[in-house]
Length: 600
Image (cartoon, rainbow, N blue to C red; front, top):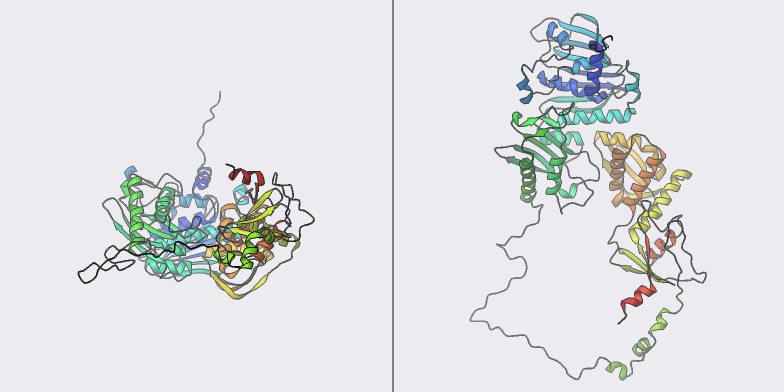
């Protein structure tokens, strides 16, 4: 039997390695920028075309490479940072992974121009699909310039699975944001198709956050600074009132490296418990410094997941540090026991006497004396109280399955309504009392109305007296552009003011300026979680999310006309009994059940 085990050619091995490291254009940006940082660059320019599918160019003013180093950098396992196995557990640099450049060169056309400060000439290298095409001296600027063209050109299956340009650009923006947030002393700029997205100059961490997210956060961010023998934590958290319905401003960094850590995320959320509404996301930018030997950054190819030796202890430190910061800035309610908070009660002295209160009572008082003395109006009201409800007809209904419609008595001319606890609308029916969940009812009404707008292209919009201005992060703004047509069909009228900033002067009927911002942010967040392309299912998700945001909240006081309108519109819906998610809107408290409550 012939041998069947054989060594893979380097080009194939590099392609396999690329599958781990290079998942999309954003992965290339990450690797090249991290290499520039390790080369001590102070200015990094990133230029991409077609979301990186056509071109990714990263230019830095770092140390550059010699001719020999430039060639070796594209070999597998080539690195300037690892000398022995134990070095893997004390990594302090970023782009240490030896096969990153080899992996990129295996799946793209790569051009490198690099020059060291002390040399007169630099080096030009061209590599395509792991094959060296050209190497020669060249006159170029100090530092390095990498150009990566035609990504995945030799792996059509991988290229086919890349997402739309807007989605891939959003991933690039996310990577640049993560790097920029932890390298605030470095100037970083990002251009897409010759259009500037970021131009970030050297600044402190607080200013870098403001510059990236294009908002005045001076009054929104609270400083966190906790030092222990195990870990040091510094950074910022957002005030509870500025928590948003969209995620995207939640960042952990360990030793200046971005990481995801669901367990530590719960430590942050727990610190905000009972001071922000469920479903909102607090902002945080937390920088953790820990002994490199106490963490393992090699449990995931992209190194965004990191294992800590003392996770439970660190969880407690993060939670306590944020609680302390929130308390320090009077976010967490506190009682000052040294000062009187309510009523100043004087102490008894010899100059004042204390007596028990005295109450005068008329033992002959009869509350019905007025009637006896001839208050005819009040007497008539008591004796003929049932006549107050004359002329009111009742409604017969059923509440068995979602498909069934409620059947009404043709003699109905008028209904009376009662709002209970700011949550329910109550009205009598022939079988008892109908109870309607006011928020769920309004949600069903708006869902069917907004859905019809998209189907019929009716574009129903109402003009706002005071336009709403919203500023987004670059990645969220890209999502908004992708949703633009669908949002327009829902009735939003949007004007672009400047980069990442819009003005909304028209909204769907039923929406107000007070919940417009929350609605738009919810649509963006919903898209992040559920969508990559606009399909009918995604449009339904958008409509449902908007109906939820625009529906009246619990606690909203309704007058009789409001309740009548909700009642009428609900029973004009195709399925008034249940919400889109299957929650019950209507319940009937039967007459027999009411009677049982009073049985003796």
